[in-house]
Amino acid sequence: MTKTTLTVYGIPNCDSVKKARVWLSDHGVDYVFHDFKKQGVPPEAVDLWLKQMDWEVLVNRKGTTWRKLDAALQASVVDKASARALMLAHASVIKRPVVVQGQTVIVGVNPEAWARVVS
Image 1 (tube, helix red, strand yellow):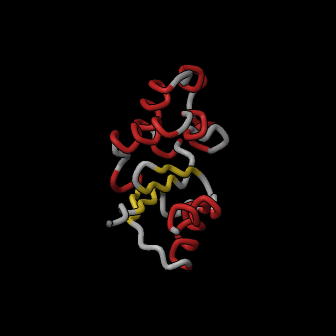
Image 2: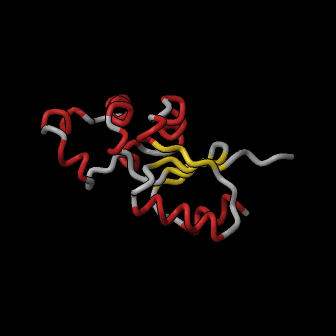
């Protein structure tokens, strides 16, 4: 049985994404990196993430991108559908990294969870 490919979604210069990539490399884990800036955010990926976890985990309300959004747009993000639209329009608002293997989705820096997924 073949394991599904592990994918790391994020932005290359993000410190959290860098930590994930270093950890995976240091542990000999093969992965595919999906760069939001160059490749965009695949709607089907966002749909999977939203099936696996609460939208409030995925939307980074502490980051610069969120703070730069106007107050009306921020206030309009109230549910899964509005969060999905925001993430597709403003990829940098997504909490990073998003690490996916099969149906498993891990958001943020979480070496313990990564170890469980790759073992």
